[in-house]
Image 1 (cartoon, helix red, strand yellow):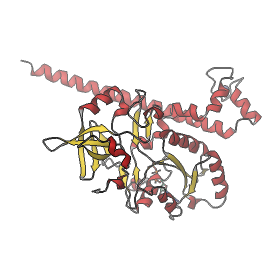
Image 2 (tube, helix red, strand yellow):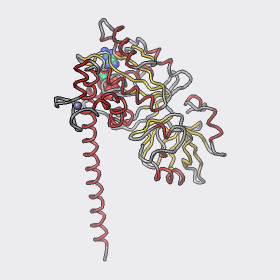
Image 3 (cartoon, protein in one colour):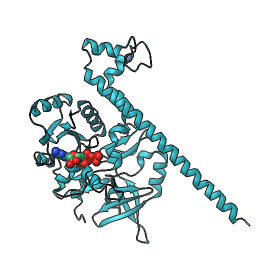
Image 4 (cartoon, helix red, strand yellow):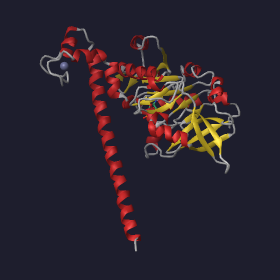
Length: 365
Ligand SMILES: Nc1nc2c(ncn2[C@@H]2O[C@H](COP(=O)(O)OP(=O)(O)OP(=O)(O)O)[C@@H](O)[C@H]2O)c(=O)[nH]1
Ligand SMILES: [Zn+2]
């Protein structure tokens, strides 16, 4: 129980935003039409009030999400209703432009907020991943997403215990890739650098950890928590069941202070925003592409390709084109996956409707 809301990240400037008589709380999880909200008087399951339902029907950005500060009101029967989402300081928006939603509920009518009020965005990239070194392109992209959310990016080069020498060179390359951003080496295995990471959470700040699968995100959060709060790949592999389906809280207060938000959406945030993100982060390639002979040039072996010519002349680093190829592939994969999911949802919906029709047909005299 949090008798002191400031431990959950509450800021006093939110008080004037709170309707009279309402109970403030922070959303720890959302589930169709209801949210699990942590308040000073314990955790409550709260249904969305009519105002929230109306606003979110018009614009999904208005839907409560993990990390939101909300107003609860107690209904006569003792249940709680979520009556308002307080203005957001920062927001991760999928498929929309977060700038529009910052500090309020207005959006472009198509975004979905994945997490709100995130102060620090850790971008985790392993120093070594199987036989590969850190992927600078991925760091570039995730840092761009972090800035866009309104949070402060901090790059973490993880698994430094796997690195023999040359770490300083790698860190210098990373610093050049993300100018103006703190870069910390960390090993969750030996504990090296973990305190520096923890320092970013001082003052009950809220963080998310972005990074590819296997980057060491869960292991790091467990190291910060000083115990297992998240399931790592090793644990999942050991019991052979894959990721557990047990529901657990997605806003995780750390014993040493500070909070971490971990949701499936945040885990995939780098992939979601790919189609917009690719163009944003690779504006140089986009611009060159305008001079390719073919408008649908894939910049692989097409004649008259301005992008390949720029690599040839040294104007464009080959590494950037390689990251661009990779992102295109990931984006295409993501799109195919989303299509498949939509199709199966559609099939399910029709099954229910058909069943319903059969049943009502039978029940008629
Ligand atoms: N040597 C070394 N291995 C690490 C370190 N941190 C994590 N690992 C290992 O890397 C693998 C992946 O770690 P996870 O923490 O599960 O990675 P994740 O980013 O949470 O991965 P997903 O849950 O798939 O997104 C596990 O086998 C960890 O034991 C580290 O600091 N050093
Ligand atoms: Zn081209």
